[in-house]
Image (tube, rainbow, N blue to C red; front, side, top):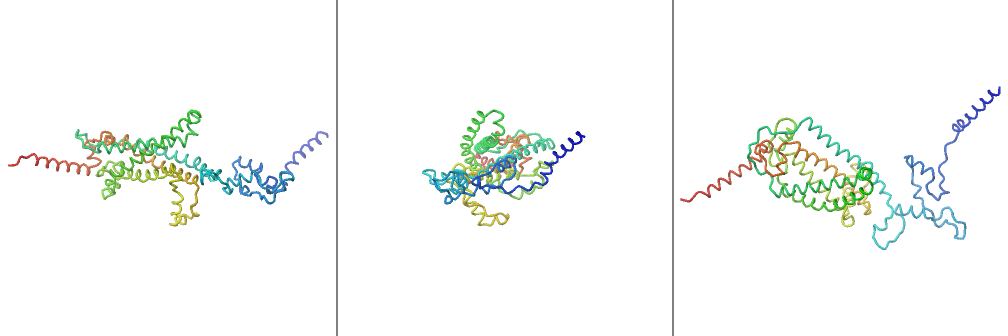
Length: 405
């Protein structure tokens, strides 16, 4: 009998919490008056669990007029307090005066920086990294399926000048500086996740400090080489009718046909204009990062886009046109990195074609001389033009050498 009674009491005690949970009313809205409008423990725990927390309460600043008399007890509700000051600073609503630094000196907290940081860590870095790895993987698969593009006929032993010395110098200056910029930019972006856990904080600090110095200074030869390359080859990269044949035949990369081309085929023209346009955009945004106060970029750009109604076409609110220097740099850094990732993927494909992907292609920028068989297979129209000029020069030299009667 006692055992049965004990069992019933145990079941009753176990059922009581369940009944309480089933009948417990919904929690009341959080009362923040006791905290002066600050966050509560529930807010902190919810944020740690990754839940969305409405932080609009942080903008509810105290009213100094409702503060208690200085002689009264401390901790009055509704009066001005240090949390009020810090919230006003964070949302740029504090009336502060600085002796130096100008407009930027007044910005002590910038809440929008967290949006930029989240984009940089959770969108830019993973998507950019996968873009580069995906490009390399696709090229490796293409190589396994297609193999190297080889010459259809044996080399003749006769060479023709493909690029002069200054053209090769400009190309390698542009290529070398871009590789350094790409590697140092990747080090800065991925240092915390790759260099730091692998080599330790001291090595990470040295590498990133050096990367920043190299990145800022190698930018100048990159921009100089960009100008050289543009004026050297722009006239050869204007699209023409011969490009249509190259497009139809996929440039000879897919299949066995080799469409005739002038000095640059359509694929090389895509590379050229990608380098000029994307490289120019990278340069402009880089200059804005180096000189954010002298060369603000996005406030003016957003003004133009709003005037053109671009935001309406995209069903977006008007773009912000009043930006602090910090916000200018955040937009510029995001754009700088996005365009940089795209151009790096394109250049990886260019390096593949110019080295492993095509037999004899490296000689064009290595020694500047290519075999006539290679030129005939890949740039037949250009070779005809070169040989025609040579024949004309030889004929003129022969006439000059003939003695007068």
